[in-house]
Length: 158
Image (tube, rainbow, N blue to C red; front, side, top):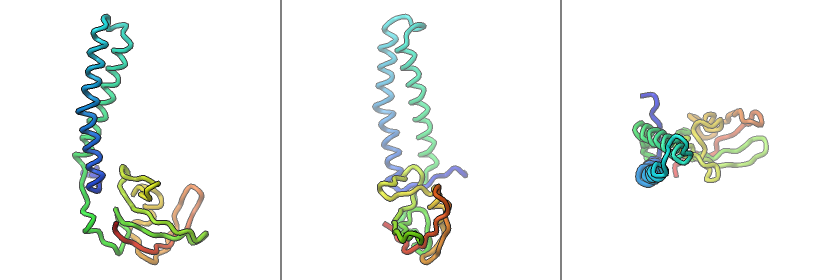
């Protein structure tokens, strides 16, 4: 099961809520649109019917994708995270050694990343460069602007 994705409890709950919304609100809405379009007569020239059927296909694909994600999801117990190394769900305070800027990031799964909240994807270049490192380590990380050297100042949990 190589496709296992790890989530925080909150992140998995968001996925489940999105699935519930699609199944209980959006699906009936599209079914209603199809029924209304069907009532308008000749389906061979009915653009509304075609559009509603296409929307239904896209919705069902999204529902299937979410069900698959949720089925392969695993929740990480954040209280069991080792604070001595940078791991998934670690809060990492780093310093850019060139301009002395300090930043704090939380390493999260792809679906939970949000740069405004300081949550970076475990698949991002910075997170990949930090994973497994310890406080005091200096790491060279390839970013779009070139190679940047960071020092890990602190590792903690939320």
